[in-house]
Image 1 (tube, rainbow, N blue to C red):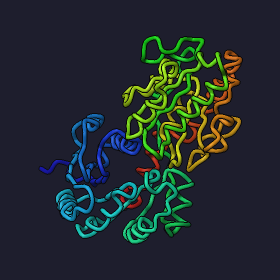
Image 2: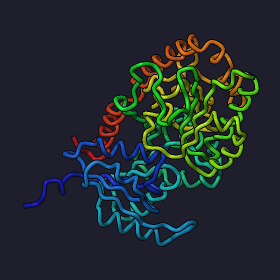
Image 3: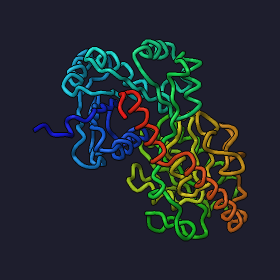
Image 4: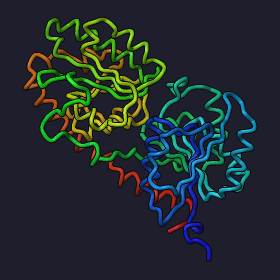
Length: 387
């Protein structure tokens, strides 16, 4: 007798690599929450996967690595076609520019339905204007049944710059686990690092990959500028920058003077981001561009006030006067990091927590996992013709 699970439709997710990252974390969250009694799922990595795979619940999700070489690797398309032929997915879901051309081997392998997700901007094409990349997207869009974006900003870019018809675009906000990411029970919690910040300190932090598009050096420069403005009061300011990447050593060198080293914590990658966020007073995101930032949603769900650069989808989440918004990317100190929080710490913290409460409410409105999941499952049903 055939195993009933083998009769369920298979969704094959195609990504570049399964490693630490916002897109990858979102995929893990989605796969873990899709009903097992309605769908089977597989993840195809064009390159490879790491121990990040262990975040998948259960052992019923196949994870394949095609070991694509850097540059043009024609053989990887053949391996991808063979994977599609072996898996026989009902739906293939690609993500971002790095996997969009998987549409060609998918169609050649007989896949009926294709979904493509745009989750953010390319490191070397922050504005989305690269002619070669636009040409590839326009070529692939004729094979794709639905393009899903995480922000209205990306949806408008797909419509006006790439030329995707409005009917072919669906905007679904990322989901965040609002039970895991929740406010501390009694004010700011202790950070998971001994002796770094007491109750009298004001802790500003960010979480993200230390790459050019996330602009961690802007955060470091803002911290230095605020310290110079505050004088002796700067001793009560603390900076937390969680994440790894090619610019981490540059940031460490920039903050290498003896005084700054005592006031900063750069731990690299961490798996306890929820605990780190509960140890902050203010969350800052200095990115050059964003789709919808998972870390903003997580900070909002934690009840933190947020200062963010006014780029991409940030303004869809961060609202001036509610959970705060920086108005100019190159003016973070005046707009987002003024010295007022340190000159009246108790009142400032009360104001910050008030904004944080509003931020939490907005995260529940926009970013519940259940809401994002239900819309994703509904679109899968429509595309596959299932009830």
